Length: 457
Image (cartoon, rainbow, N blue to C red; front, side, top):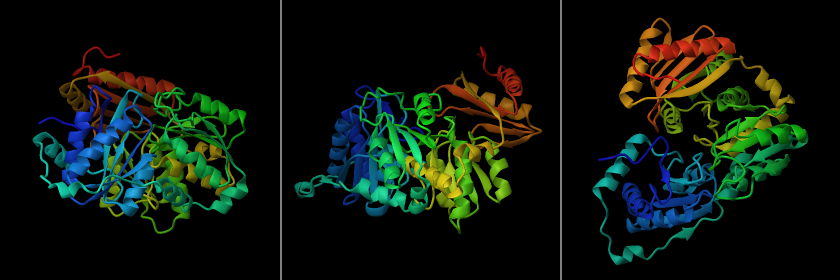
């Protein structure tokens, strides 16, 4: 039996890997998982093939006696909030940050979070065994229904988490780069309703993503950064294809990875929202600066394997947290919902600036300074695992976290070496106080890896 689910749902090239036949069969498997009579919310982002996949998944769900409610185009966190409030589960058609030829299918549990890995395995078993429920004709009387007000409910929920009067009085300006997808339907509206003057970029819906690549990296948001400076904006926001992630740009036009922004927001939220457990959860790919910044505030940093599903489920298992976040721009504001939420992140940034009366660049300048290197080397699974063990042994005298590859903590530096979950490579991330120290450290790591992997470069 093969594997369907990757790190975040089922994804592939539309018409090649992700066909209507696969979507129909997967829809039946998802329907079998939720059970006859379950009320399922279905939505999609703007990607090509989305309408085709929605219809195929909907047919599969209905064939299992599931009641389908279609929300149309909307961000993933909006669908997740709607599921949490009103439905038994959900399915989102999205490939998030992947290139435009990709699409995907995500399964959402009753609590609004992506279903855990063990439940994905159950769905896969239904899919490969062809399990389905024989239903008599009367079971198909109820057809798909529309759920048109989910975005309205979601926008009101986001706004309720911040002080609207404080933000309105601040007279903020923001640039929002929606990446030509469904963030266009939410984030500009949220900020405008909070009194923020919004300049939009790439906020026309277009499945070909003509404005930029859908991956919201600081590099891909160069035009948004320029617009922030040119318009004297207080901050900028860049979304991925389904707007569950937000890369933030400060008032100087500098874009920041999500671990930096996540640390700053976690400290702010802890000061404003009383009664939250003093801990945050973040993947091992985040910088160790989050510990240096947050632990003096009494907030414990708990390292997790990479992946938002893992972070979300660990927070719920352990009874809550101030937040969860990833270096890729995913931030979870737990008083709202324990999932990544790009519009919520944007609203919290506006609240932070307005409440403190301090420029975002000043908040971010308080973080410890490191030089970062992110790279990868081609490696089979066996080579990658060998490389991880070699790094463990070489740095055995230093503190290590081994929940996902190995993360090494040294004096003034850290190293992460982990096998990719999506391609045959070994990922290397490291930070040091200076560029020279970081490059020297990378050379040392590659020398260690050469015992297992030849042809480093």
